[in-house]
Image: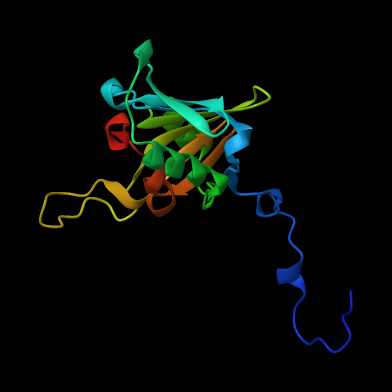
Length: 180
């Protein structure tokens, strides 16, 4: 291969790792594409909620424990929340861990589970897991730090094991009380 006027290695421009070519999009929905958003907290079910699209930019907020009970909510806060699902990406695929490690993580209890259903009935599910700290236990004045404070793991549609950032996901990691 030759590029006229170029001096150097071409290797960085050509890579064969399939994951480097793949999209990092987790959620890319507009208002009218979303049928339902559900966020579950397996260890704290009282914080879980779901949002249903009623059409014409109208939504309802519900409790997964009592599907018939509608929860009063702040309309502006809910609309702003739904708009956040237009562009949520993950950092990258976790390729440095063994299959045994990944199996142990995905078979543990997730800290949160997102399920977003589009208008066609297709569901995208993201299970989230704590990521052990790479630096090991470290005392920051409040006790030892055993989990990474900037990143956590995600398991998308039971096939892709990825690294997520709290910076990106914190705005959508709400509880039903955040909409009152």
